[in-house]
Length: 215
Image (cartoon, rainbow, N blue to C red):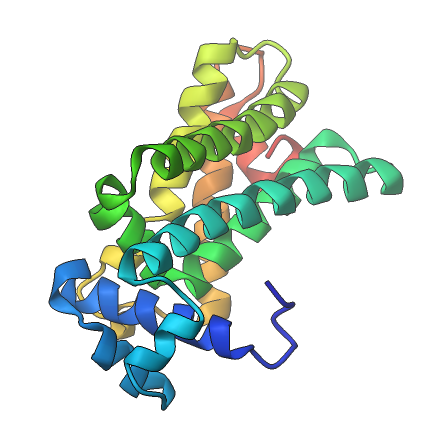
């Protein structure tokens, strides 16, 4: 995908509208003609870009899983090059995932509802990428809290993902405060979750960790 500052290609426009429509009305509730109309081309014209709706769905769900994993790896590399402490690296991972949760609400909804519609090979690839992404976080969490057992660290990562990814399930976007306030709130809640997981395990006081020393 292009960077978010670039103008989207026609293919990206199609995927963006497909994600929005699939999330709003379900995969089977949207026709190819409707997706085409949303981007200003005929339904048959979409077949120059995609074989069909199934191919769009696969590219959306595999694509976002790849983007998250690549972004996580890049975050770790950049943090290592900058000599950041593990807590700062975890902080950066949380910030990146919050951006995803706020900017790609349709994809989160689509994943929750439509993942099982992918063919087996694509669904397995999504799951593999997701596991790899989780393990990036687990490694950093255990650097921040060396006494935290692997299973507990993994459970805390999944809990934080569940928290951050819950924003699309609010009844309406207006239920959220402004973006800056929402992002700050989500970050504090994520910090609290990791601190709570470590409290009493590695000797870290949960409240102190939530203030930033041990994200």
